[in-house]
Image (cartoon, rainbow, N blue to C red; front, side, top):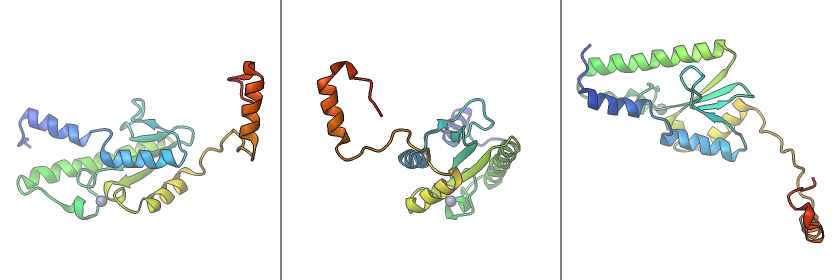
Length: 170
Ligand SMILES: [Zn+2]
């Protein structure tokens, strides 16, 4: 099928499709980070270069644009006014590729969660709950919580023994 866009337009368009650090993705990243999770981004060694990867948990989160990845929502149902056949073919290809990538990752032992763009614009509390139940409990902090007065005791201790600076006692 002939591409209706010039190569320049196409590459510009494709850069949008494949773009990293999109707004919905940034929202999800900020959210999981604030929840205490740490992750890798777009690792080259993983099929499909998934958006957000939690290697120790063996979990992957994809943040998909509703139009480009054909979500079953209003945004996903939108279709450009011209070259409809081309776009149907193109978008169907995206969807098929996504499914193949998910299958292969799952076969390799990864759990995959897809977060849709439209799920990142409101009700972030709901998204947060979904992410937590998918990812499991956040990492336990290794440092014990400060007890009342501990901070001041530490400060006094450091003031009294400057050589202890940098060697915080738990
Ligand atoms: Zn959607």
